Amino acid sequence: MKSGSNLEKVIASGKMAVTAELGPPMSADPHEVVKKAGILKGFCDAANITDCQTAVVRISSIAAAVIALREGLEPVMQMTCRDRNRIAMQADLLGAAALGLKNCLCIAGDHQKFSAAGKLKGHPGAKNVYDVDTCQLVGIMKKMRDEGLQQGGDKLEVAPKFFIGASWTPMGDPMDFRPYNLKKKVDSGADFIQTQGIYDMDLFRSQMEKARNLGLHERTAILAGIIVPKSAMMLKYMDSSVAGVTVPKPLIDRMNKAKEAAGDDKKKMRELQEQEGIKITVELIQQALEIPGIKGVHIQAIEWETAMEPIVKAAGLYPRPTFDA
Amino acid sequence: MIVGQQKPFDEIWSMVRDFKKVLVYGCNTCVAICHAGGGKEAEILASMLRMKAAQEGVDMQVDSAAIERHCEPEFFEPLDEKVRTYDLVLSPACGVGVNFLADRLAGAIPVYPGINTSFYGGVPEAGFFVELCGGCGNCILHLTGGICPIVRCSKSLMNGPCGGTNNGKCEVSDQTDCAWYLIVERMKKLGTLEKLLEVQPPRDWSTGTHGGPRRVSLEHIRAYEEKEEKNAATEGK
Image (cartoon, rainbow over all chains, first blue to last red; front, side, top):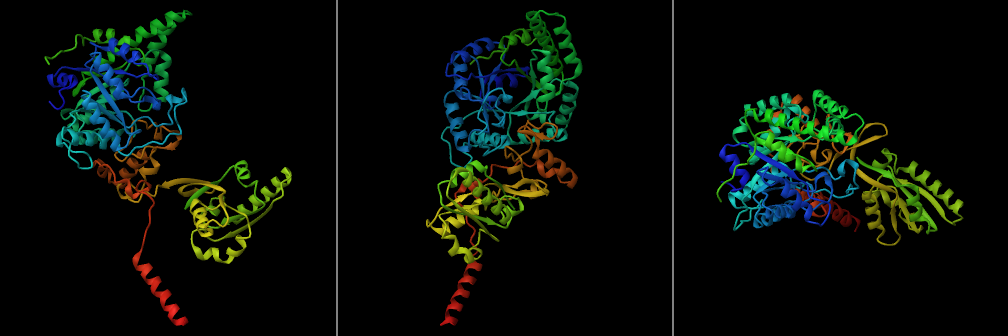
């Protein structure tokens, strides 16, 4: 075992892994994290704790991850390259390991101009760091873990043992380069990969075939990302505005149909779309798990954590495996 | 070239309003090409300031002048005495020029900036300027098809595109090309895509501004100049 994390154990056992997502609040109140952790616990093997997602200030990933851990939910802390230089990154990794965190996902991070797609003020005037990029951060973490060395070369008395993750946008352009983008992350030392949300399974299947041809599925555990759709509007937005995401028209039509079936009843409109969204999610999960080389799913029920239980149960992924400590 | 843009007029006026004798001192190199601070722009800015002063009832003399370059001593010499008769120099040269002149005047009179120095760029078409180099001190353009990821990628990524590429555009703006999209396409055309497969290790950024102020010292040139000076002095005796 590289880290001994629950997520690593599930993957090593050969069972399909399930990860979820927990977004920390824009508040110093820990209860939101405690509440979300309680909802997700038992329905995933680990939950990603986002690191100031959408470039908006929230409880830091490490702090929220420790709160989740205390609640009995294994966290995947996230670290963006946007906010820290390599000194702060490595200091935080030592601290996170000392606090008992075992999984870390490395990502570039939304640019500070993003500010929740303009819905919040954010800090578009902030200076970004990008001292190192995702591949380089993965390499730093691996060097710390496997060689007991800092990036600069100084020795670590006790190395932080992380199960190292990276993200992958398989359908972003330039699309023919994306499998090689994945290869570079794997070459750098990524133990697991969580993909951007996938709705176009056919396209993902063909990208996975290219990844398999490079042998990447044998060197890393690829978890297919599924973003739970809540409404027809959300699917349309994802299709038109989210980079690397395309939503096939039949899925949008299904959601529209669910919406129309409610007539003018707003409450029913929401309920029917949510039901359809869960159904679509379960189908996508089942299709993804059939793709050779896929080792699990990363289910993102954004600000809708209660959806995890029915999804995981309907997808036949419940109960989650447990291991003796 | 260095690209700059004239500061908003109101900002300039608030900087200069309390001075009695102002020289707008243009530079006829880069900032003239980007229509920000050459002799012509200095003249226009001076006349705008005169009009504003008259409007506001402020007693102020504003003149303009320009020299070829604001980053080498010899160009300044002919106007040195005249410049010192003013109580403010408003310089629409780049930041290099403002620093250089302020050092030269050594606190005798202040030098204020008339433009915002923006970047090192090119002029793909008249009136349009784009940033193409970050002056990072450690060029890797041979690895990226001649496209600089340091300044043309919003995240200065070194190993390929992030997840934010959308139809070849950057997540920061749909008016901004994704540098990595361009790099991949360029490398394909050049037949050197395999160069991109190598993982680029963390960079040494100390060659850029992160390493503190930079200097380039060409010892052979300096030694030659020193010798020439000595020779001239001996001959003079």
